[in-house]
Image (cartoon, rainbow, N blue to C red; front, top):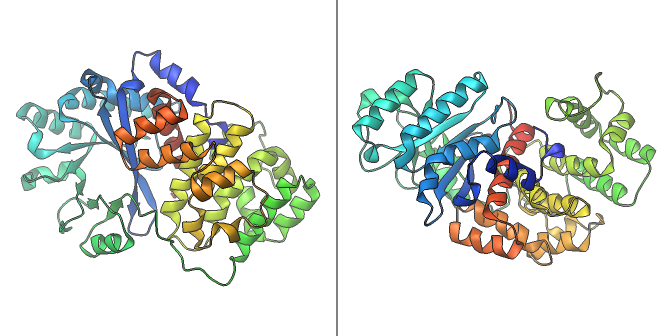
Length: 417
């Protein structure tokens, strides 16, 4: 799935709704699953029914899968952990089992369960499903499963307390992480991953100037904003060989090539620029701006910034410049934390539209409410997301469709593997 071909939320919402699945009745939250090396392992999606629509839980997994799926693949490079309520577990298992067969081994789906809420019948269903290849994650509670059951769980999700990883037990994933110190403490206790990532602290120390590659990216963005010709852009890429290599890798990679008309590899920088077009090139540059760093410490923030861009783009009610602007707002929203440099330094030479700058710098202007919506969904704040949805003027169904589509798009572009 390629972000440049991301479907608007309207079309995805209508497609899912036509199957009798009500995305409007679901309240979703999400966080990345970040490994010890700072690489993204996947996402954990919290799924709950809106108040008064508890019956929607029975079809929630089907709704999420329908919105995430792209033909026969589902987040093929990363896992998608669905944290559901216990009441619909048996039907959830049946849906995931059927989807795994359809996905032919490409499904990264896992179901998260809490041991103390499981009935004997549900335990039997888990045992059978595990033999059939369905994967489960255990949400830690006061009651731990017997040792002979632990092999059935791919990981244990625990709160940010004193939980420790031990040899012979499933990998420990720690949630409720708010600071970099809490990340370090969880890893020191043996955690294999954290669920979520602190967004308020820069990942690198500010230096006297921007790294050469990042400075080159911003220079190219400035050239595009000033409508420079293709020759000038080609020269700028050739002056930074690592960027030129990344551009050719992206345009010839599966994420872009699957939706492109060319059949032979593109080896010319000028040809790559012409195929992408200026608007799409800006969007890829936003990704390259983070990926160009040799450090992997920024990867969680890069992933979240790219997902925000795809999410806000899918929410756009217009197909003109608003979609491009909203993608830029999301993708640039964490750039200060990624680079360690102030907005003033980063945007000094990039002629970005005023509404984009207002949203990124201060959550102001017409796009500020869109960025606020993305942030409350990341926190899993159901009440806050409903309020933000009202300010944006978009239904929860379309918001959920946009969220799930953006997670699949971010996975296709930023996952390592």
